Image (cartoon, rainbow, N blue to C red):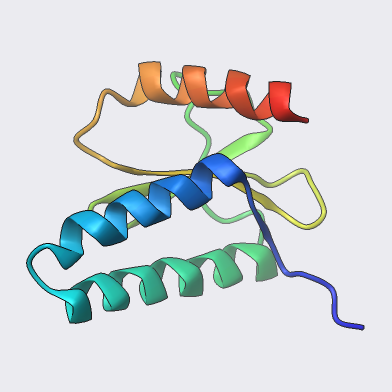
Length: 109
């Protein structure tokens, strides 16, 4: 039985679907490439969970952040396997977004 390298929370899965849908309006191939690159990055984060950086303005030190294209991946590096909590465009209001998302993920358990 293989173990999962990472966990994508339901909220992060929704983020990925919204990203794919938005890009696919112009190009399905591009949407597929972006999602593939994001999933490749999830694997990389799982293999080296200390990469990325802390953003004390966005979250406590349990959370790290990694950028792919113009998207920010928020993840918990202290869980086994690492937990992807959000994928959001970097132009968003990140502080409000991540405070709300972290509260939501913690409520979901």
